[in-house]
Image 1 (tube, rainbow, N blue to C red):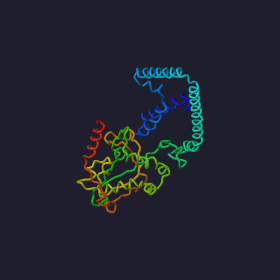
Image 2 (cartoon, rainbow, N blue to C red):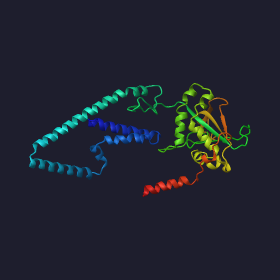
Image 3 (tube, helix red, strand yellow):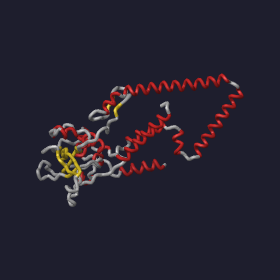
Image 4 (spheres, rainbow, N blue to C red):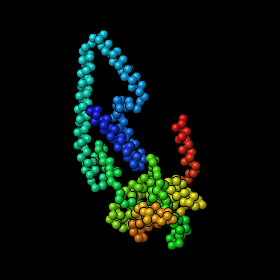
Length: 331
């Protein structure tokens, strides 16, 4: 950006905006990555505020000495033509840079018409408008859900999961709501990838189905493929898949055996109010299924992987990897 005041102001405003989002929400690394390129827009005059006071002074003294040496050399040589050529080259470079910067700004303004339409649309979302990705719409959080539609998973080890006497237990994620008696968690700035992707593909994407009172088949028909693969791996006894869940390993794989069935349902979650939640109930959420008999059960039979595709990992491997990373960082 040719104008320094515009460049520095834009950088400081964007960095401040991203840090404000970091302070009020949890979107993992996306805001830090968004603020990082803006540092390149800050020149030495701004960055010198974060250096020790003597550093800018030393740099200024070295710059002055270098300029005086260069001036003295020009006077001794008397090459006025060289000096004129040097000044002309600088003017040409500055003019060319201004023209290129102005052309780039005009091009960006022209390509921004579609993202601006997306921004002011009813449901802004991530989109691109040409194969070169010159401009895209970063509307991933362009709206706030008014209804929290959650995926509800349960599991059982009963030999006959279809029996009305089968005992089903909540199969919780690491953080997103599941068991209505579990307190909401606090997690920042790190994200659990499975929870994040489930939130994006279910909670942030299925609100319209709830508003329209769509039938249960509409929800189950949009169950993401990665969640279907997750259930197959859990029914197969995959250790890595179990490590992604919030339910303890020894409960999910009781006696080393995977569940006999996993059920899938969708429900609207709302916080309980103090008047609605007696002190002894311990419930944090009111859960309203999307419809009566909306649950779908997946038995182990017919939903397992071949043994050579099931991952069996030592439970201590996470600690080993973590300590190894710390050792590399310390070294």
